Length: 156
Image 1 (cartoon, rainbow, N blue to C red):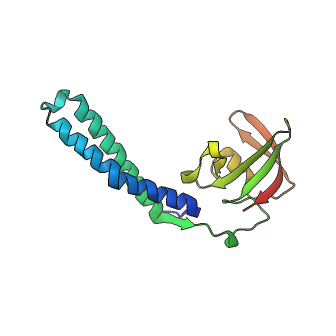
Image 2 (spheres, rainbow, N blue to C red):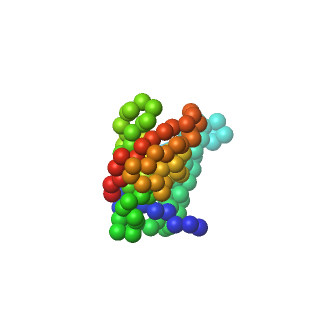
């Protein structure tokens, strides 16, 4: 399997989520499952079905996090060219159509959070910005149409 590049913040966030799932969520769901079993007939026991479904979700998420963290490689800024857009870069853009100023940080898919300006390198905008330099104009095809941006600044 391939490596997953994460910032230190992203790595720690995933570790915290894993710790919470293993230490708090999983035991709570197992306790709910045990209580639901005590109600008797499991074939018509909504609480039991809901607890089983929740446990499956928690176990699946734990497995995914463990797998991701086992492949994680922390980004070290000294290994990444500063003059081009790469994972970990914060990019100030101007939308050439509207004049609106935008700011995105390119991150691994596991760290993406659009509301906080963190976009995945595999998203259409992330892919469209990768490898470009300050001052360049980029055209990015997204489901809603064509975006035209000017890269004003790249920072780490």
